[in-house]
Length: 292
Image (cartoon, rainbow, N blue to C red; front, top):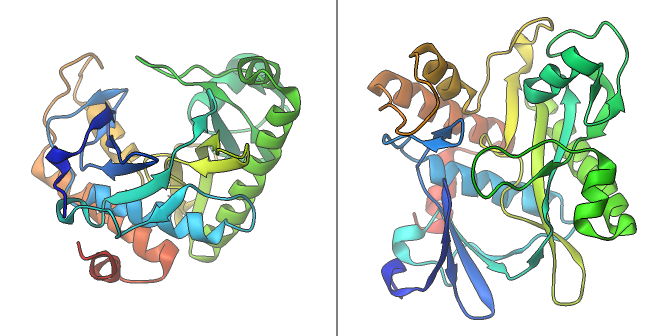
């Protein structure tokens, strides 16, 4: 089996590495964690395996809604990357983050407070932080190479994509995938408040879901039994680390501070609990199935 360091590295992001396998790619999720677009020096053990396991679960569950890019979770994945790696199709990636919001939180809440709208979509007056929206909304963002993604309206997304019909299809599919995932998560006691997707076109021009799907990194997961609008919510995602980082007085510029052991341990617990609640299986089964 080829080792990771023998493969051509195409890209290295805040969390993932992408390797070239010729007509395919190998995507490997690390245990790195970032807040405010800065990577902390302290990893969260097993985080990469949770991200990959959850993505694999959702890719399979949403295949009837839209094809996913996964080819294999074992064949072609080096031993050191088992449980964290996916062999995937090469795609022509589309230049927008497809954000869907079912609840009013984060940058959407900030936009609403200032304008009464989110990404140009007007919302009813008097909504509170974390309120459920009348229906899920598509609020795209740019893909920033450095710094923060920027929220844009639908017209801006259509212009970036260069094909209004394709942009409308993206909106439709993004909301459909969100609604499917949110319904399943709620059955498991988790509110999927919002999430973001990435899509690309395969060699035949087929719209394909890529990257990660409804993970604690790309989504806000809230425990349904503790949901209370009018405030920020406890979460199963990296908001726990964000809240800690905010409390330190760190100015959000590099370098990011080291994360204390107790915050690392609690974050790991939250990620694994999210995996087990959503998939309905022990995390150990994912490790065993992939040979991690």
